[in-house]
Figure 1 (tube, rainbow, N blue to C red):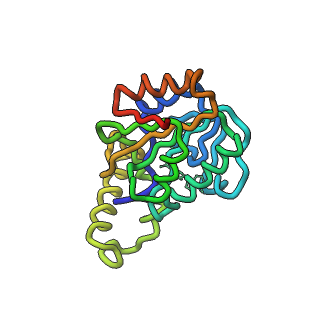
Figure 2: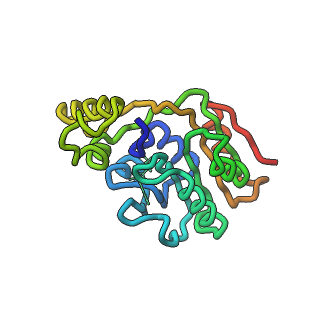
Figure 3: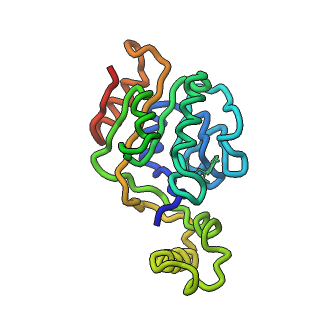
Length: 210
Ligand SMILES: C[S@@+](CC[C@H](N)C(=O)[O-])C[C@H]1O[C@@H](n2cnc3c(N)ncnc32)[C@H](O)[C@@H]1O
């Protein structure tokens, strides 16, 4: 089922930190998600990044929501581009589903410095507790009012929670991925571009804007 509680797995978080250094800002996050990202500043559903100016920082990382339960990627991508062009961050990385026919994906392609298309799907950590609270907590009778797919998902999530598993690691949603670099550094002398190229180049093809 499509939902927004997929957290970046620790291998990719380490690679992103190896490229950017410490992550100063994660604009699409939660307290649980930030146990892994360790950004100094986060915005959350309760403190929406869409409704306020972002602080001026050095580095930002965003893996935006991508389903209707707490927002599709488009407004988050638009806001990311506004804040980037206002120079609220010097270097930033965006991790999204690869969705070339979407207008927001085209916006990322047109504005980025580099993009990596990983050669295998990223395995995310699924926050089943957040999913339950957002979607199923108030369902009185799953046999009524839920589609067959939703019912299957309801029982899957319920079983995981009964086993005490609140965040299920290593799950791949059914989407390919793309990872974008946004940088205000001069292209000719940019260690962050070089690191993006050499580190993520081991996991997929890197395309550069000319
Ligand atoms: C795909 S998850 C990514 C979490 C984390 N950044 C990571 O990469 O592991 C998207 C997160 O954005 C949060 N979110 C939803 N709406 C938001 C908003 N308006 N402002 C900030 N965060 C929001 C969700 O609660 C969820 O934790």
